Structures are given as C-alpha cells and as structure tokens.
Length: 204
Image 1 (cartoon, helix red, strand yellow):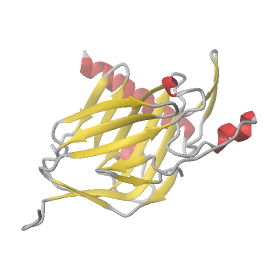
Image 2 (cartoon, rainbow, N blue to C red; image 1 turned 180 degrees about the horizontal axis):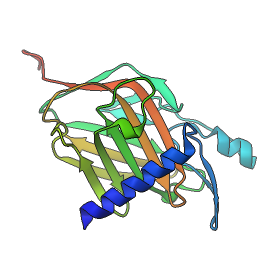
Image 3 (tube, rainbow, N blue to C red; image 1 turned 45 degrees about the vertical axis):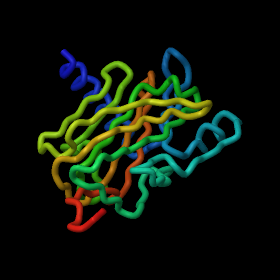
C-alpha cells in the first residue's frame, strides 16, 4: 500500500513537471485561490505579481554543512564529493508566498547526466511528502538507508535527507522539485553538482 501511494504521488509530480516545462516559478489558479510554487531561493515573482516586497536567499541547498545558491532554475556549483560509508546530509531550504504549510513535499533526483536533463532522466531518487513520508527509489543500491527530518522557522521549511552511500556514483546533476497543495511545482537544477567516491587511502 505504501509503495502504491508513493508511486502515485511521484507520477502526479512528474505530470505537473511536464505541464510546467522549464518554468520554475509556477503560478496556478484553483478553486482555493492563487498558488505560487515553492521556491529554493528566488521569490521575485511573488513580489512583482502581488505588489509585495520580493526577496531571495542564497542557501537553498546544503550538503554536509556547505551551503549553495540554487535560486535559479539552472545553476552550477563546485562539484561536491560525498563518500561511500560516510554519513551525509542534504538539506533543501524552501519558501512559499502562501506560507510553508502549503508545501506538501520535496524530491531529490540523482544519477543524472547529459545536456539539460529532466527529473524523468533520473533512476535514483528520494522523496519526502507529508502524506507518504520518505520514499526511496534506488535500484543500483547507491544511497543506502535514507531518512528525512523536517523543520520550520518563521519563514522557511527545511527538509534534510540523511544517507550513508553504499556505492560510488559518477558526477551527476542534482534536480530538486517541491510541490504544494495545488500541485504548483518549483524546480531547481544543479549542473554536475555531486558525485560519490570511495574515501581516499589515508584520508582522515
């Protein structure tokens, strides 16, 4: 039952991504009013559309304590190496104009190569949702056991994935997606953002 509900929720997210294409600042109208997509750093659309003060933040992604700016739809950061057998944390920092309580989940897609790939090109991903908890799709056994915790402060939602990788992974894009109650989707892509390697001999 858990697996079926997870697959269904992932399919919903994939369908929404297909509909919105490359627009990471999605605006949706529904029977519940206006909805702006979750953001990983850029909130200018909310300010300009509704007359409020726009703001942005430059630490939407944190890997093992190292923060990165992922406020654009596509960006490049220094490739971060994590290690087989070494505990790793990956945190997404989220904001939404209507309040972070609107955000329903976030997915982290890995093992992605090529030119301008999409989440659908990933064969290794983890997802946290309020309804389904943590779901892992890892057919190659790369990530090991994955857990997640969620925290809130006055403005932001923080979703942290905890994992201890089992196998190496070649340099990969990172794609993050988050969705809200109206299925408005925010996306951030990071070019060649991560790889997994064995700990070098003599490394302490």
